[in-house]
Image 1: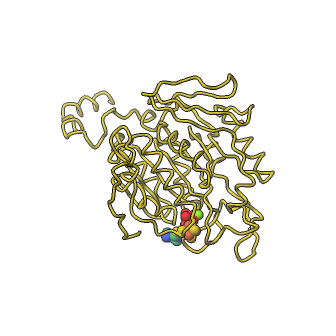
Image 2: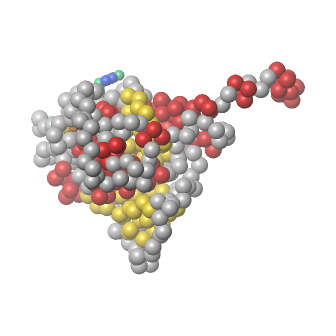
Image 3: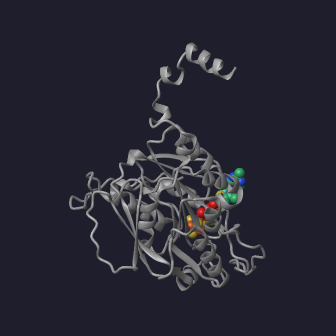
Amino acid sequence: MTYIAKPKLHHPTLACNAIGFTRRDYEGKISTLCAGCGHDSISAAIIQACWELDIQPHRLAKLSGIGCSSKTPDYFLGQSHGFNTVHGRMPSVLTGASLANRALIYLGVSGDGDSASIGIGQFVHAIRRGVDMAYIVENNGVYGLTKGQFSATADQGSVSKRGVANSDSALDMVTMALQLGASYVARGFSGDKRQLVPLIKGALSHRGAAFIDIVSPCVAFNNHDGSTRSYDYVRAHNEAVNRLDVIPARTEIAVDYGAGQSIDVTAHDGSVLRLHKLDAGYDPRDRIAAMNLVQQRHSRGEIVTGLLYVEPEAEDLHVHLGTVAAPLNSLQADVLCPGAGTLAEINAALR
Ligand SMILES: Cc1ncc(C[n+]2csc(CCOP(=O)(O)OP(=O)(O)O)c2C)c(N)n1
Ligand code: SF4
Ligand SMILES: [Mg+2]
């Protein structure tokens, strides 16, 4: 973690959001990542998304594992709750926190090493349980922090900085998230902030397991010719299926598009996700179609980005478990322990 705090200089003309905060109020400490690292662009997109959504910083909890990507929560939302967990263990800590206090917005930040290798079991179960969270993987195809070994998401045939081709087949976290039942699945690119900010806003507004795989080049170890995670490769092979606008519930929704060109999806909080179709035949409400498209394009070396799947009426883990509306950590002893009489009644009913 860094120890360099940002100077608190606020220019008086900085724009404020609806709750009176400037973008600076959503920043964290100064980043110690390599200049040009994709992860820093993702941090900037998270700051922008939270500012645009008027999120009160103390209502958000950011959790991560270990890696350059997992260091980044120190560089944004300095006034939010934070927990930097053990390598690969972010999903279980986030699940526990979410069950204990459902009143917070949960943002999980991880890397391809953190989530697709040591933490793969944790990732799988948090997604299939429908934990209410926005889960971001900053995917560079390598273990950046430990000096550039191939990760499980590195494409077969992709060449390392030292010229060695990866012989293992790649694990695609978007395909896994779709198969596991995630109710919001997207892929973004750290080099396309215009596409990325709305994808993050949509994930934070979604109730249920929202997953975003963000291709985020590692300039130190995986940005050379022959890599399929370099800025040049991703720019040349990026195929966006749609462009997303997130319209907050309080905003009037104007119809400014031709029929068939857009799809509006209403989120549980009343905000509207407006998807401008770039691929005319693509419907993000069809999970199987999303899986097919991602696989087809991957076999051609293309990277599909955009909001790939959304199920607006999804149920989350709290619905599955039937937890009470009040956060569990706010319940007092008399509610948690209704007394010997109630226990005797329960026991009698079981006899
Ligand atoms: C239990 C444990 N095993 C191994 C490590 C060493 N280690 C630290 S970060 C990391 C991989 C990080 O890769 P990724 O999640 O892709 O993050 P990046 O640095 O690429 O953003 C590894 C293997 C560790 N810290 N703890
Ligand atoms: S080593 Fe790679 S992932 Fe880590 S900060 Fe540097 S560019 Fe980013
Ligand atoms: Mg990585």
